[in-house]
Image (cartoon, rainbow, N blue to C red):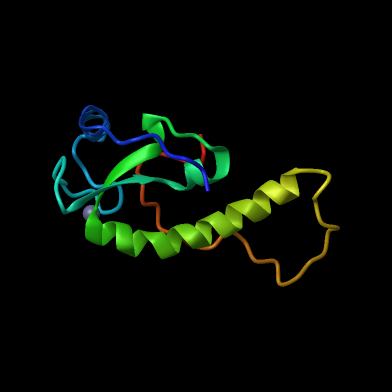
Length: 115
Ligand SMILES: [Zn+2]
């Protein structure tokens, strides 16, 4: 697991403000701190080790719980993409069903995966 930097109150405030105080999942206002807010590294940390403020969203606790299974799904997909983009690990081309990217509703407006 990647070691995370400590979440200081100042950092929380900075991140919260940067997001306009909105939940990264549902877009509703979220408290800056307290039991109902979770500061969530998107899957970016998991993949790139990016631990910058830009990689963190405030989420309602409930939203975080909803989001996590979706994240895992997306992470699995991105892992496969990364694997494919690396010539050394790229699997031999084979058509199996031809499934495209799963329909995951965009949880983070105006943002694309990664950067
Ligand atoms: Zn929410």
